[in-house]
Image (cartoon, rainbow, N blue to C red; front, side, top):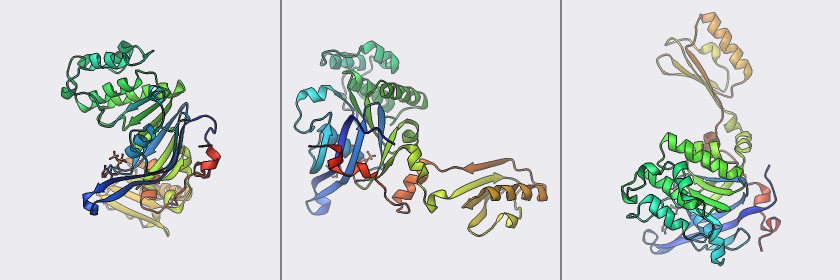
Length: 334
Ligand SMILES: Nc1ncnc2c1ncn2[C@@H]1O[C@H](COP(=O)(O)OP(=O)(O)OP(=O)(O)O)[C@@H](O)[C@H]1O
């Protein structure tokens, strides 16, 4: 369940057309056709979708960087397209391409950005925290993708924003930097910031997000906490698989029953798949005992966000936006 009070961002029925597009004989192309979401303070809200699903377009409309074709957006109680400069100072943005001047040097740039705010966060603390000092004097154009990403994150935080938009925050980060950035994002969330991030990485959403909106072909098609999405009960998602390693060419007939199949994917590696029940595990144990087989590994695959995501994208799961998220009147957008 989600908090209902005090949302930082409300989007209802967002539509965005781009173009004119030469490939469409100069017609406009609808890249977002119906996206609704609510992002709360003290939560990480993730827009999860494949490449080209419309995530960046949505958050750029939410920031007022793109003009929407239709729908309603309220960011900190204001329409971002008509809001005054005061709104910008309360919002931090890390864009996918970084948007950093290529000739600038990271620390000098961060001091410059800090100078634009009345009460910025201390530059040195952010530089230390994000490991920027090791490339402090290298020009932005010579930084690696992950280093640029950390500078862009620091720049987005300098104004101590109430709302933070992060477009693909883990793109280009090595594992250590990813852990560092994720810890910082969680701390900001715990400090009460509203964090809205986009990702096509299910793992990122699973690790970071308090609430996830799955975006597919310009529409928000499902939403919930990771746990709620995982509990979505459909036949396709109850499908499980058990992998085990043992001697090659074993007779697996005794493991089978209707709707369960077993294949030897490579010599000695078997996958038992279908609607696995506890009784199948018991049968597996007896089978091992009878054949005097000691598997070298047994792995039971549990349902992941990836299963939910793929089921939605393949159309085998009903599209299920939460009902309270679809009615503009209930959310008080004026
Ligand atoms: N100005 C434009 N002209 C033509 N097509 C556009 C334009 N802007 C966006 N698109 C298309 O709109 C779709 C959505 O783009 P968007 O960048 O929002 O996707 P995304 O979900 O953020 O993808 P990614 O994960 O790859 O960043 C894409 O197919 C993109 O090519």
